[in-house]
Structures are given as C-alpha cells and as structure tokens.
Image 1: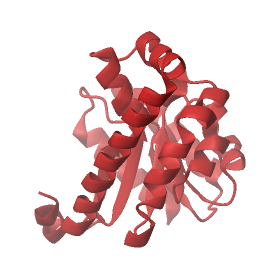
Image 2: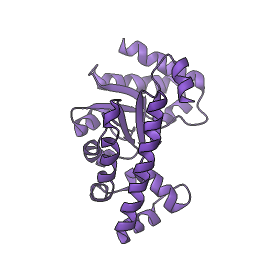
Image 3: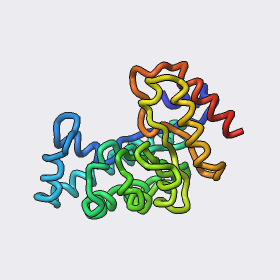
Image 4: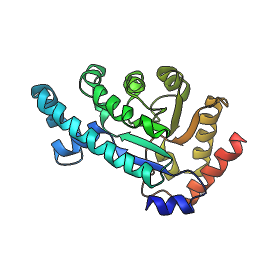
Length: 217
C-alpha cells in the first residue's frame, strides 16, 4: 500500500506507528485506556516485566517502521496517544529510555522523524530528549510555549480537531492564529493537535489546507 501511495502521491508519504507506551497500555488494559490503573500498577510493581514488554514493542516498532521506509515512506511518525497520563518522573524512568532506543534505531535510515503525544505539555522537554526531528504539540498548549520547551527542533501542530465539527469561521480564525504564532519561523509543520475526527467534512479539511498554504505563501 505504501509503495502504491508513493507512486501516486504528489506529497510526501508519512509512515506511522503507535509508540511503545501507548501500545503497552492497550495490551495491558485490554480496552481503550482511561486512567491506566493496570498499566501504571504493572509499571511500578513489576519493573523487570515492564521493561521486557517495552523492549519487545520497540523491536516490533523498529521492524514495522523500517519496513515502511523500505516501501517508500519519506517521513515516519511515532504516535503516543496515552503517554500524557504519566508524571514527568515516570516518563523519564520507565518510558524515555525505550523511546530513545526506538529513535536511535531509525537514525541510519536518514528520514525525518516526528514524535507526537497528546496531553503532553508537561512532558515536552523529556520527549524532546527521547528523540524525534520534530515534536508534535496538541491544542492544550500554545505553539510558542510548546516550541520553547522542545528546543531547537521542528514542531508539528496544533489546531484543535474539534473545531472542524463547528462553523468554518471558527476553524479559520484559530488556524490563522496558529500561523501568526509561528511567525514564519522555519520548522513549523501545521497540523491538527490530534487525528481527524470521523464526522469531519472532507471539504472543510480541503479548505483548511488551502488556507494554510495561502497563509504560508
């Protein structure tokens, strides 16, 4: 599928994988995580088991992402939907070393990497240490504030995806505000602060893309 997209796409093809913590949470909770009671309990009560699980997931992520690049993906993104539930202490102690190994294992491919999480305003500096050429910002933090926390690297974000379910005028106003906050600084990848919600009108997404291209021109 990636090879077909690469042949047909007029824009770069981005590969994707779930981050080790988020995949571990789904495995341990057995459902969509909420407060992550089981996950956090295992992480603290059985650290050797936790590290073994995370190591296996990193190995799988590496194989998966390397295969995507081999098929033609020109950028890869590691997506951590649930890591924002952790304290900075737990992230540094139990997650950061594994994520760093993941990004280090992609370095020889020489493709840009994006490190994204949600609810991660308090973790951004640690996530930047873990790796990624760009760090994703969700809509819970201002663009300039988030950028100041990740240092000299690119950022991706950060329009609230729920805006696209409402009137176009509100979407356009906040998209322009994000562009103003970026101030034309190199290294900003405009994006939603999370995925596209299922009820979103594709025509509004097209209008948003056009607005951003016009604003960046």
